[in-house]
Amino acid sequence: MKKLLKYLSLGLLSTVLSATPSWGAERISLFYPPFGEFSLSTDALEAFAKEGKITGELDTYAQRATPQQLAQLRELLQQRFSATPTLVSQFTYSPIGEQVVKRLGELILTESRQNGFYALRAAFILAAADSKEGLTVVNIIRKFPSPTIKLNFEEGIKIVNNLSELLKDRDAAVAFLQKQAIAQTSDAIIDFSQKPDLRQPGKLQFQKLYFELNDAKRDRRLPVDVYVPQTKSPTPFPLIVISHGLASDRYALAYLAQHLVSYGFAVAVLEHPGSNAERFQQYFAGLAGPPQPREFIDRPLDVKFVLDELQRLETFNSSLKGKLNFQQVGLIGHSFGGYTVLTLAGAKLNFAQLRRDCYPNRSLNLSLLLQCQAAELPPTDYALQDPRIKAVMAINPINSSVLGETGISQIKVPAMLVTGSQDIFAPAIPEQIRPFTWLAEPNKYLVLIENATHFSALQESTPENNVLPVPSGLLGPDPAPVYSYLKALSVAFMETNLLNNDEYRPYLQPAYTQYISQAPLNMTLLSSLSTEQLAQALKNGTNKKSK
Image (cartoon, rainbow, N blue to C red):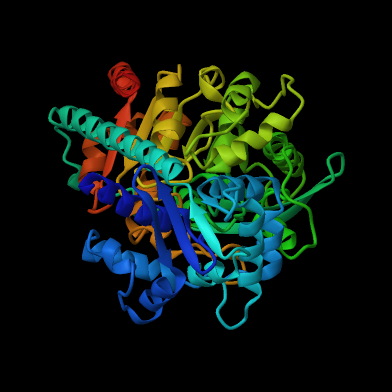
């Protein structure tokens, strides 16, 4: 019985803390054979949320939770999510939104023990339309169209156990990477305090130019900011192109563009019109349809078109003439932009892997909700690689299924993958750490930032540009150190691998990342020297888990 109650409290807390708004009605009930039914009244939960009082049946479960867990639970229950009824409706009726709600519906059942999908969707929309209480957990419970909600306890425990295993694997991988980095650092003899600090801006000022490029063949207008160093150099500047993530814009990594241009790079930052912030604002306002699977093809083609157009403009535009070197082009991308730059570097879509992972998709890897959209594309060999690309840096990329091992292994240019240990949207092991071992290119680097999330690399957006407000708990620690890491590493990586400047190679060593690391966002870097050991460590972890 003690073990049962332990699992009961874990199951209830895990459902609340990880499934977000998802209970309903006047009672929450779960049946655990052979011990019978356990339930909790909505009134008791609401009293705890609003007044901090632990009453009724909640007292039984609260006794088995730590004060910290109770505080987190109350904070979640009190959280009012800023979302209009139109936004909630548009999302829950979209292909990805339906998948999310259906997965929740497997845990949160109706009184007749049916999938709670339709009831949950109605409750979300009704709660968002309630101007007094708004979109809160308790209000979603109140709006759930059933007197009792049944929790699928066995499914919940299964998910909690799987999640626990994934977290153990992640922690083991992080520990392994740290151990390898320490071993390599012990041999370092460089005094970085006597070398230039790449976290600081370079010496050059810059000019920012704006272009709105029109690809008439694909009916896509592409806003592009081009940063050009202000100097009388007779030689053209190497060009870096930056690709943003889903529902983002060209401002999210503007700090990185400004830093690189101060070191003598020209930088073009584009927006992808089918998946940028503006498109999502229109979509959630009911003015446009959801992003299409075609975005997996159009995004790389956007970059190709921008390069073609800049190459054309460079022949006659006085601000660009003679200033862009299209023989030295590097790419930087975040999340969906990380996928984008990897395809341009040579990775091909992996439809066989998509079929295995998406039909059905039972993974806890949230990025598969997006990646599996690519499975709807006609399975053909899309020509996305661009020979002008000489080096790529992918930050929190998504790629495990849409590209997979056979896709990633085709990349033949230097690559750097950056991951955050607390990224729940593009988890470190499947999306960056394991794909790092698939890279056949010898000049490759893996950067792990502890406690960094999916959003740590992104510059804070303005209220006007913010599409979906991100709860503070998902943002992680102050991202300022992450900005400084990416500034330094992007300069070192591009100088070394795009310009063959050996003066910057020492910065691509574990000793340097250790030197500039700041707790709690400590950083670890590994190069190709550790690939075989890392691959074996991941394989051992997988084998152990399967036994």
